[in-house]
Image (cartoon, rainbow, N blue to C red; front, top):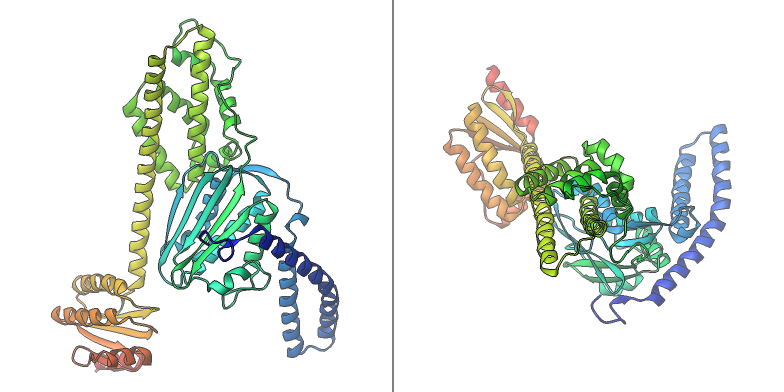
Amino acid sequence: MGNDPMNNQISDVHIGQLASVGQIAAGIAHEVRNPLTSVKGFLQLLKEKSPDTYIDVAEAELNNALLTLENLLQVSKPDMEDELLSTFNLCAEIESILYLFQDQQYRVKLETNFENVDSAIVSGKRNQLKKTFFNLFKNAFEAIPDKGTIYVNQFIRDGYVYILVKDTGVGIPKDKCALLGTPFFTTKENGTGMGLTQVFTTIYQHGGRIEVDSEENVGTTFRIILPIDISHIQHGVVRLNIKNVESGNLKEYLLENQDVFEQHLLSEAVNVRDKINEIHTVGNIDLLGNAQKLVLFIVENRRHELMMFAQKEGEAWAKHSLTIAFKLEWLQAIRRVLWNFLYNFDRIRGTETNREEFFTLEKNINDLIDQFLNSFFISYTNYKEEVLQSQQEIIEDLSVPIIPIIDSMCILPLIGKVDNDRMLGMKEKIFNQISQHKIMTLIMDFSGVAIIEEEAILYFLKILEGISMMGCKTVITGIRPECVNTMIDLNLTISDKAETYGTLNQALEKYLMRRDV
């Protein structure tokens, strides 16, 4: 939290203390679990002989206690798990985790900025770290009760990868920050504290550290700092065992050595190579074939075809929601392998390239790859925005469900919180439906609405006036006391704009009875 190590930073000493607390708690949990398991067995026997409601309640509470102990054992001693160590791209894993929260991104905006994707390679227990970031993101979304933003940033500094998770949620009191990660400490009403205990313990076990910055009613930032694995980094060009071509044509050289190119590419893209079959199955995308196509477009300077190919690729990756970090790693691997092949092309031909020729070639090739990336991301983003827009329109339609009852009479049942944004959407939908279906009576039921914002009430009165101007009568039912109090405080009335009833049934009985008469 800022730069003050005494108040703001979760120090290594504190993390060690949390780990010690976790180990002690795990030992206690282990000792307590055994007798509780025995008690559970006797309760089950007693239940078979003389069933009783109290036994069911006791058994349910006992199961809750055992589940809590199991969670405590799991998060307090992650090294007890049998998961093997592996090397992987942290950005790719984080992006795949964020995809799991797509259902939340209609109310919470998610902004990501990954600066050093290729270098974000860490060594450790992949599933444990994935669970760690899942818990962090889950807490961030839950910290935002209504609308807000979550920022996820990544960068490399001094041999460490930094992951910043910032939310605009309710925040944490300053005096409580030092307790974060302690088993059973939580600021959530129904929380257990086990999620953050797992976060702190796992990061500590992986040689990392955590910094937390929080302010009530402003938000919270978690900084996860992990050492990068530098063993995968290769410096300089690589001499390859490749075939020469008599023509000296670069395209023929690449085609002749296609197998070597693909093998070298797979060795460079350590995280993508295990996903090739999955990406082909999900999106019908041939990564190796497309890599060869991209390289030929570049060396032959087929700029227009390259741009069209990038747009097609961007749409395909967006359509099937494929992990974008894999695409970035794959393209950077293609760039490195292509330069290796160009070096070996000159080497086996005995050609020496002067500095001006080299820098001209370097500028042209890297410009083309960068243009491909730019077009790819524009296409990817445009497709995603179109999908989100269409989904938002569906949600808006569902939020204003105008239901026909009889000719020229409809019901609009409203549920949940009504704010000014929702009123704006309602206005357009209501006016269009009245015009399209020639609605003469619109019954608006507010029994499912607990909160109406003051600004929304003022706008609602304008909507009632518009409905009247279109020759439609408004009937309002089920207004709850909270909403009535708000209208009285604002010195507002709707009695001159709509007919009101206590319940929807009362209104239906009266209007359907009129029709029968």
